[in-house]
Length: 98
Image 1 (tube, rainbow, N blue to C red):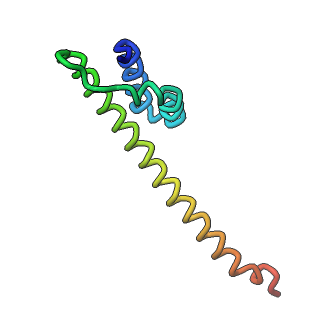
Image 2: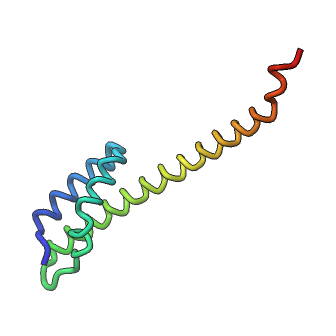
């Protein structure tokens, strides 16, 4: 059984980090609480508890989506940087031309 108050606290912190687009805090929260997150299971005869779990899952999915989107954007920027460097290297001889 997991601690429902910890789940609520984690949900709030994660939700605020998503709102703030705080990638480092999202990663820290998920890393520090990984073992706890993996113990979350649906509760029998506890409708309110299951609603809290559903809310956490929704927030966690939003955080995961944000991390994935940032990763994709960073990959695009890295690709553009590498492409630009290769194009600049092609024209090295131009600066030495007379």
